[in-house]
Length: 77
Image (cartoon, rainbow, N blue to C red; front, side, top):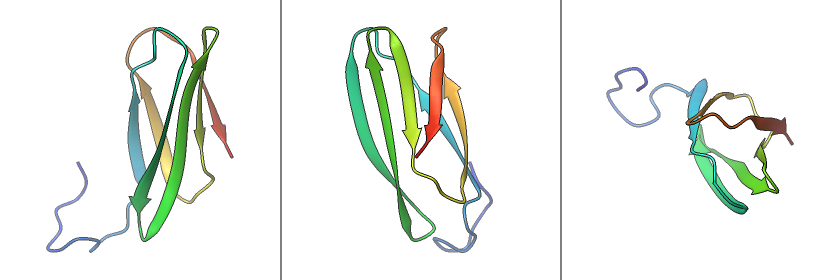
């Protein structure tokens, strides 16, 4: 949860908590996060037991929280 606002976009977002529930098999998810008037592309993929999150370079800080014991590589692209 962020600060209390009187209206949408009253304050700019400075950080995002990104929760990842790792796939048990190979898979890929791509999504776009609208924030501060821009779109940030995020990709998560699992291939042969390796998990990677790719986050488009931006001014927003991401705190990646992994649900489970998998190790996830985080890459800014």
